[in-house]
Amino acid sequence: MKIIPLSEGSFTVDGTKKFNPFNASKDDLKSRPHGSLLVEVQPFVVITSKDILVLDTGLGFSLPDGALQIHQNLIDAGINPLDVTKVLMSHLHKDHAGGVSKEDAILQKRFLSFPNATYIVNKQELEIAVSKLSKSYVMEDVTALTETDHLQLVESNGVIDDYIYYEWTGAHSPWHQAFWIKEAGETIFFGGDVAPQLMQMKTKFVTKYDFDGKLAADLRAKWWQQGHEEGWTFLFYHDITTPVYKTSES
Image 1 (cartoon, rainbow, N blue to C red):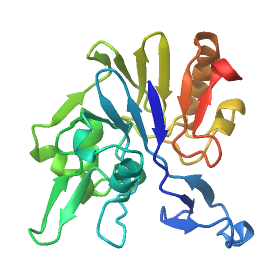
Image 2: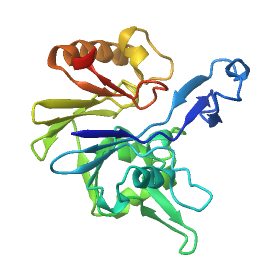
Image 3: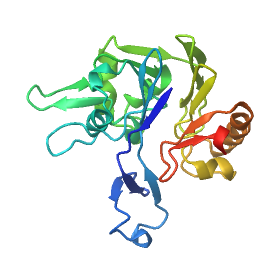
C-alpha cells in the first residue's frame, strides 16, 4: 500500500476554534493566544490494490484559482480527484470535513468534492453534524452527504470489502470512529482525533478538548501497545513533523 500525506499547512487553534495559518519561518509561536494549540491539518490518500482512499478531507480551503486545496494536493501527487473511490471519515468536525463538499458559486449549490467516491460516515455523527447542536460542525459542509446515494452509513464496528475495518471509539466526539486498512500482511491505522499526534501516543495525558478525555487517553495507550505488537503503520492527522509512523522501523 502507498501512503501520501496531503498537508494543508500548520495552524494555531484557540478557544474560538478558529484555525489561524502559522508560518514557522516568520510567525512567533510565543505570540499565539494563551492555551492555543499548534497543529497540522493533514488528510491522507492511501492507494491499495482495490481503491484510492482519502482519509478525512481537511479544512476545505480553496486556492486563488478556485481549486480546492485537497484537489490540488492530490493532483500534485499524480492522482485525479475523480479517481478517488472511497472517502473514510473519522468524524465531521470542520477541520476534518471542510473538504467533503464544494460550493458552486454559479449554481449556488454544494456538490461532493469526490463525486465518484463512496463516503464512509458514522450514522449518528452525521445526524449530530446536521442538527446545529454543536459549533464544532459546519452544517453546510456536510449537508450534501444527506442528498447523495454515494454514502455508506455505518454504526458500531464492522468491515468494508473484507479489508477496511472501522470501529466506533467515541472519546473525541460522541460518534468518532477509527479505521484499520489491512492488505498483504500490512496494517495502516488511522485514529483521527483520538490519535492525532505521535507525542500523544507516547505520553498518557487527558486533554480538555476531547468529549471523553480519559477514554481517549486509554485508547491511545491500547493502540500504541497493540500497534507495536502487530507492526502497524500509524497516520497522524495533526502531527507537524511525523505524519506517518511505521512501528516496524522504530
